[in-house]
Image 1 (cartoon, rainbow, N blue to C red):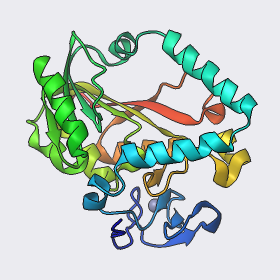
Image 2 (cartoon, rainbow, N blue to C red; image 1 turned 90 degrees about the vertical axis):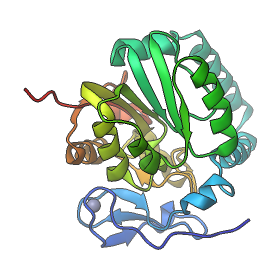
Image 3 (tube, protein in one colour; image 1 turned 120 degrees about the vertical axis):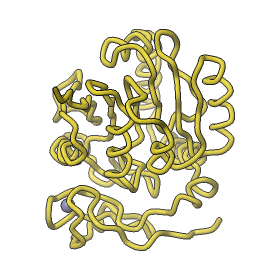
Length: 268
Ligand SMILES: [Zn+2]
C-alpha cells in the first residue's frame, strides 16, 4: 500500500494555520488537531486524492473498520445493532423522506457510491471518486435521466452548469472532504436560487463522543478529515453564502450525527 500523504493543511473553517495536536484522537501517522483560531477539529495530514481512489477507497476501509469494531463488541451490542438495522429497514422510504425535505427535480448526490436512492420525481445525478462504484452508478442514473461523474467532489462539481440542481445531497460526505469551502462554493453555484443542500456529518459535540472519547465511532482514519460541531458546520455554510437550518429528529447533544439543510438564498 502506498502511503502518500498531503502536506499539512490549514483549518478548513477559518484558514488559520495554528492548531493544537489532539494525541488521544490521533492514530498511527494521522494527526487530529484543534484549530487555535476557531476550535474546529480536523485531520491535519490527510491522504491525497490519488491514494483515496485506490489505497484507501472508502468501501475497503469501511469494511475493515466495521469488521474490527464488530469483533470487539459484546453479544448484547451485536443484538442491539441488529435491532437498529431492522428498525431502519421498517422506517419510511428514504425517497419520500428526502422529497418532503428537499422537493422534486434534479438532485446531485455527492459521493453517491453505487447506490441510487432516488426515483421520480427526483432525477438523479452523482459524483463518485471510486472508479468501480462510479461506473455502476452512472449506468443506473443514466437510465433515469441523469449521470454520474468520476472524480473528486470539490473538483468535479464545477463541471455541472450553474443553477442546474434543485437539491444537493451530501450524506456522510463532508467529513471526508479536504476542500470544504471549494465543495460548498461549488454546491451553491450549481443550485437554483432557493435550492437546498442536505448535509449529514458526525457530531463531534455529541454526548457519545464526550463519553467514548477515542472509541467514538465518528473517528475513522484516514477517511474522516473534518470533525464538525453545529457551530463549525454553520460557519462553513455561511462562508459559502448559505442559510442554515438544523433538521435533526433528536436533541442535538444526544445525536451522534448533525443533519442540516443549507439553503441558497433567493435574491430579489
Ligand atoms: Zn479555524
